[in-house]
Length: 175
Image: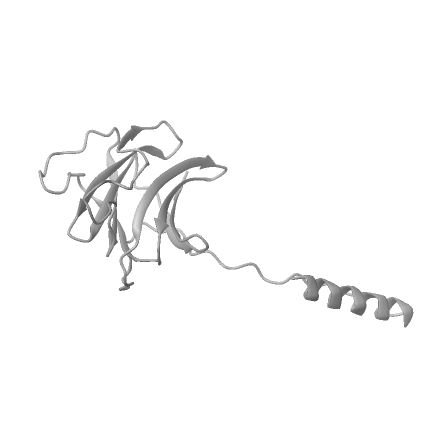
């Protein structure tokens, strides 16, 4: 980064000393995916499997954001609307407010260590009153799959993308 700034400064100085008016062009920002209500699927097979250690959420101008923090490599995922949220294993309904639900499935992944102790420190069931997001829940950690449920009041468009260093999965739900 320092080298790029130094080159830019040298080009500007040379342009001015030659009597040329410099024109600065901004580098394009990394494009984010567009919002949609369609399922988003991206499978990968990292080895070893990453550990899901946290889920965070925040309200922003124009969208509500959910971030899943990983310890390890980025993993595959599926994010989609479902009719109801159910806990893995028991099949019991997840008691979140809302009328529309987004299922977030990470595979392969785990939220526990090799001795079966949970490494996940985020919310297991949290009601929210954000413009779009009404609640979040950890719905499963079983056989290499970690799943979450997100509750909304309408079928709001969402976008999904990864961030790295550290690895995270981000879901933005439009207002």
